[in-house]
Length: 270
Image 1 (cartoon, rainbow, N blue to C red):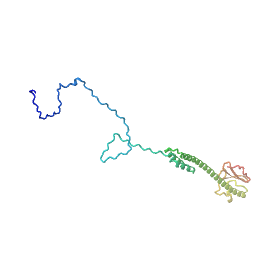
Image 2: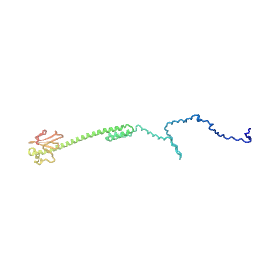
Image 3: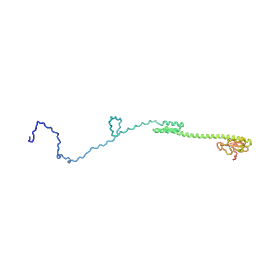
Image 4: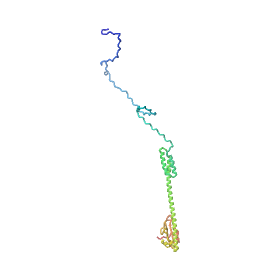
């Protein structure tokens, strides 16, 4: 044992060594890395590429009820609207214009062709709206047009026939009236001839006798021929004619008195 060492007491428990404290070394003892090594370049981790966006598939299960007071965390992507349910295609053969087409055809045959045309047009529109052919509406419309044209032609023919028949009736009535007037005038002229042994030379001569005087309702001409009145013509001694026109100017009805002809006209004096 040296003189600088103290005597060790073996009966005293040895002190536990304390935790070693880091020894501070002088700056001179630490190696200077900044001088001997170059400054390292900082490196960054590679940036991951963003994943491709995919449309989230809407869940078909109903959302679970959230507890009262608990907020629902909004999704990162908006929930897409539910796709509209496709309507079932119309059943083949269903034609809304079918009934109207049949009615238009029936009405056309029963004389109501104008109504048939209208119903046919409506039937075609309803059928085309659902993609149907609209055949019955087309047939009803065509039949309505055909029967309308036929009806117009028939009405025109009936009107023409009616007018012709009416004109013929009027002509026959006029001829009958003229024939009756000619008979009355003949009676007056024959009475005058019986009294004077000659026929009246003028219409004024009929007034010589009361029995031969012409009545006011007897229309008599003295020169021209018409189909509305009779004409008295003195042909000479013992001869006279009563003439009136028929349906045409060439249709002359001649009634001869005395010795006058019933086919040839006597010369007239105007």
